[in-house]
Length: 485
Image 1 (cartoon, rainbow, N blue to C red):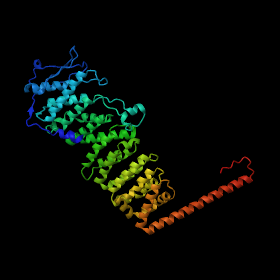
Image 2 (tube, rainbow, N blue to C red):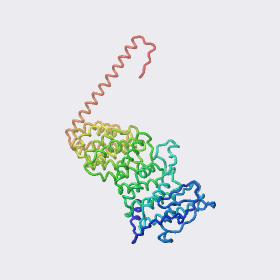
Image 3 (cartoon, rainbow, N blue to C red):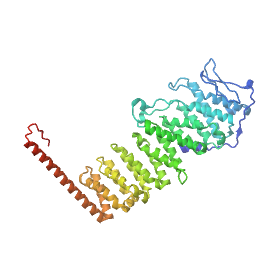
Image 4 (cartoon, one colour):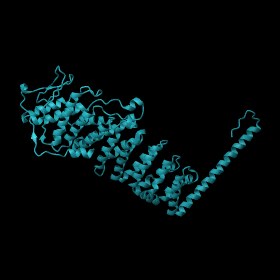
């Protein structure tokens, strides 16, 4: 969808016309007739425009811009923008059907004009257009479905997905905004007066919409705004930070985390080196804690991509990332464990030897616990790490540390794991270590047997101690003593 939208925006006309404002003569200023009694005037200060409501309650169809003289197009364009400020109730499909269709056609005409590039908008028209876009887009979102059901945001079925009823109009408004932002005729020095910080922050608030179509458009628009308006970049990053903080530490409910992470993936990819401390703090304080919420599976793919981008930019961050993932490792959620193991493999695949050495002990202690997981998918995903050549080379380089940490887990799998596939995979890993260093493998095996022997002796001593206590209690005449076997 993104590429299709952008390609449509590259079509240009051969000649541009500048629609200039006419003389500000009050007697010559027409009005727009609409069916909306509560709508206030949205006219510009230079040309006084007014929306009037007739008794008939009918929205009048305005002529096309190409059908009027050039001198009248400025006024007509603003009238069309004001007509599009009218809101309708979409809860009933047939209510105001004619008026809704007139607005839809007017919006489509505005999009075609901006997309064609055959004429250039002056500042007054740009201001009025952003006002119209704001009136249509910035609204109170309906209560999320998880607020009514108590479920976690983002884990609903597709059948229960909420779709915005006013989307036939909203889609065209988003298209108009996108065409305006990507147009080569849009002067950022002028446009930033209307697409200001407040406008951008309100756009970010809309990412909580449950309609995936709206979030997709928002993602495309915000990405283009970030690329074109450098003045907004710090504001956008800070606002996304705040959304993540609120999601992680307060609500754990937000519909647009995945889309925001997609935008961040492109932003991180463009970070200059050496990386600023601000960006590293964002990784530690926002991205890594995003592993904590229960709904991480809904956006884990995008999160993992952002994490990998950081490590590829600065390999020294791999130790920080690995320890951060281990910090939020799930205890009882096997699905999350499988996701985390996959992410660990991606991080390890770009980790250098010096950073691997710093975190290998806590890392392989956690991998050992995964190897012995009764959930076969967790154990299987952990064993698949040995299919990665780069990770195997790192293990081989530091086998003196790695093998003693995981040897016991491998032996337990071979002896007692219930799944036959896990038996086979574990045997292959043992064979691999044996081929790497037979002496080390035999030494670890010997230590394991000695440890088992000591454990058996301690268990025998414990049993004998309890038997002696029972005998002493029996000799003391404990008639009321209860024996527990």
